[in-house]
Amino acid sequence: MNPQTWLEEHGDALYRYALLRVHNETEAQDLVQETFLAALKNRQTFSQQSATRTWLIGILKHKIIDLTRRQFHESPIDEDLASEDHLLDDFFNEKGHWISPPTAWNNPEKSLENTHFWQILHQCVQHLPPKFAYLFTLKELNDVTNEKICKELELSATNLWVMLFRTRLQLRQCLEIHWLGQKGGS
Amino acid sequence: MLSCKKVSLLVVQSQELPLRFSQKMSVGIHLLICRGCRAFKKQMTFLQHFIKRTDNDDFVDVNLPKQAKERIKQTLLNHF
Ligand SMILES: [Zn+2]
Image 1: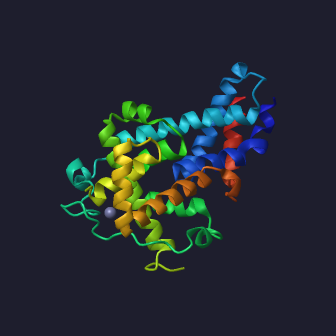
Image 2: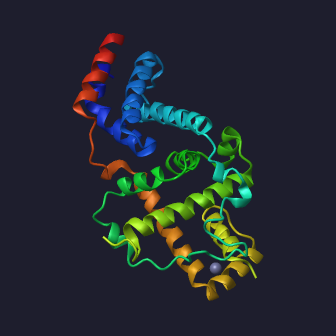
Image 3: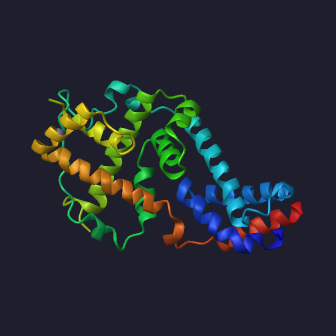
């Protein structure tokens, strides 16, 4: 293991990994740097049984989860979203009917074939209220379990599901408007 | 009869948790008669697949920008 060549050998891979999960280039670059610094400091603990790349990604993943959790707690609660009772009001009426029912997508696989998936997802996730975006990142992109999320983000299970549900509804709508639906085109 | 709100929440939950038999029945019946929820269910399956694909960095064709690389290199050299 030679720290001198780390940056050349693993820099790009770590950057891609981070960029997919933090939605911001500067943050991704900082995380890569912090990862290398932590790796330098702890290189004695590196076991030869794991590949250098795997070891570095492990450190990076830990840092991403840490940062996202902190961002979740630091981001303000959107007034409109503060009440769980009204969290779904822009999607369903008081009887629980769709306000604007989903319509079938025309061949979504094909529409997305030539597009950069991560850019689409980034764009849609960025449209989410901050807390929802951070929750999405933790759960879907870092595979943190629901149990752990509830504990660390101080959410009840019901709370979590309503947030996840709203996130799905909003991402669905975002994809429909921008890429897949008849309304959006292209 | 379950509402669309309830059914679509169950659809989202069913991607992770097995539904109870009675829930499965009620959702199934609702889906038979509700086009909106049917479309929603199909789209949730697609979305899940879409997210999993995003989780794989093979298709990301970006590299660490030169300036950032240089900056990180200097920082690391200072810590050797
Ligand atoms: Zn319905």
